[in-house]
Amino acid sequence: MYALSCTDGFKYPGSEPTYITDIVPVSAGLAAVGSDQSLSIFNPLRLNQGPLKKVQTNHGNISCAEAFSVGNSVVATAGENGTVSLWDLRTDAANTAVLQIGTPGEGPGLLSLACSEQTNTLAAGTELANHQASVLLWDLRFPSAPKIHYDEVHSDDVTELSFHPTNAHLLLTGSTDGLVNVCDTRITDEDEVVIAAFNHGSVHRAGFLNETEVYAVSHDERFALYDMGETVEKGSPTLDLGDIRKTVDCQYLCNVIPKVTGAGAVIGAGTQDQELFRLIHLSKNGASWSLDSETVVGLPGAHGSEIVRSFCFVDEQQVVFTAGEDSCIKAWRPSA
Image 1 (cartoon, rainbow, N blue to C red):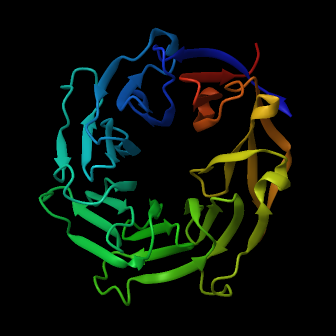
Image 2: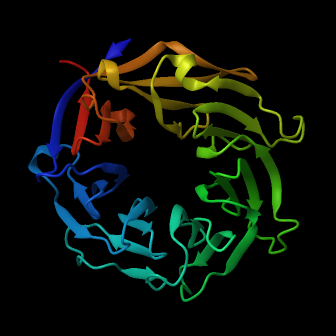
Image 3: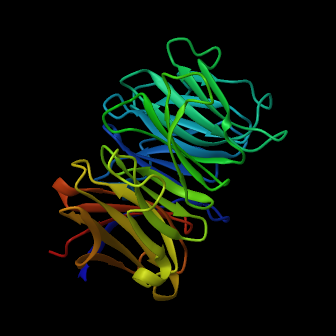
């Protein structure tokens, strides 16, 4: 295992711990979501100086955040009161949302977001309310009402959304009903919209690895890959690692981050008992996927005995960022 050292960090002040639930890299810096309902932007080279800018969100309880425009540093947030806000996190921009969608309390709580700057589209997944869970899509040029409203794609909380890396009309959806679906959003007929479906188990994390392959992690930590390609047996996993905690000897899986090249992904896995967080590479050799035990990167000390809620990495700068339930954001780099 190749170990990195913690070289920088910031701890949110206060007598009560602030869980840092999401970190989102954008051009203005590193955006962070806190359980104090804040959205902050940090200089990734000087985390210890604290936030360059901090805004208070207005979702009741913020549940998710996604970059809408990395280049323009616009981040979308959503939460339990059913609203979506877009924020310009450049330091010279106002501390108010540049756009708010929805009226607080009018609709069900929102649990997931996906953004496509290419098509000016924002997708949100709702919790189950009145026996219905929905996937809503807005054209942000006309945000007064959703352009698409899918009510039958899932039968329980919609926990994960992700647009296809090259075809922005394809949207992956995951739910606690156990299904990972791929929808063609050009189709409005709900009987036809799902072009691929995988029955994985209550979905905690899911997304595209490349043009045709997707990953899924269930709430009981089952990890599998699926392929929506024409040559693959429909619905069956192409790789099923079972309970990832047993496979890689960890206590929880934080997230899976696909490589931009489509050549693999990085799995973030934590072991609180050992105060350790590891980055494990999932790579493809020919047609088969495997975990690469030779290239594991360890972050010893991690966030102590607290859970790491989010991580990201910048390969060119050889830095990994983590955020956790100990109120801290940390930067990790190779030892000098």
